Image 1: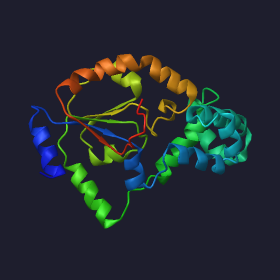
Image 2 (image 1 turned 30 degrees about the vertical axis):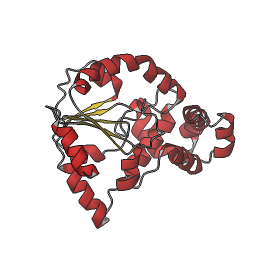
Image 3 (image 1 turned 180 degrees about the vertical axis):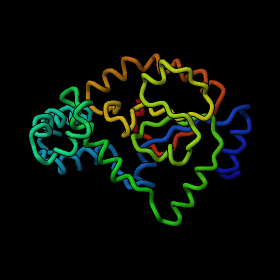
Image 4 (image 1 turned 135 degrees about the horizontal axis):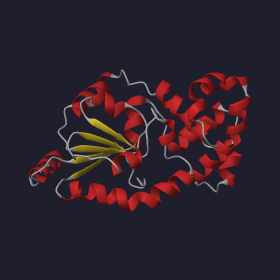
Length: 227
């Protein structure tokens, strides 16, 4: 029995379709976007920040690194002519010292996340579009899933999940935020601290779906944490 046949038999043992977790490997493969570490490195380069210095200061901890980057970028974002367009568009939501970095990352994802034109990968996306699942949970910030599943209801961030009447069918849960709402991004140490503080409530909200559904992970490495 090959892997495909084993998976099909496993899925058939459940009365409900799977839930699928989508990670950054999908964004890298089909949109050409960086992983988290690569994103932070590229953003340091884009904004004239010293990646090696900030990363060593953060001890290699990526949320700490993002926090340090946000502090460095904050003042220049408000004063430098380079960011005039961003300020004009987003100043109303730039409410703290981490806002500028989140805004620039959200813009980068929106502008750089272009769907591949590679015929093989396009074919894979068409197959992905046809999957039958009850829901999709993602830590990605890009809009690929909304493009592939336009009829699904999208919930952005923990707030939307915790305080909405979710049905558990035909829904996308963007638990780390979305590039369409820069303030929603789970990026810095303070973001992760708050995310973990609320995580038990989020887990309990979703647990009822997971009990009766198989779970598929796509786009995560075996060492990647998703919370």
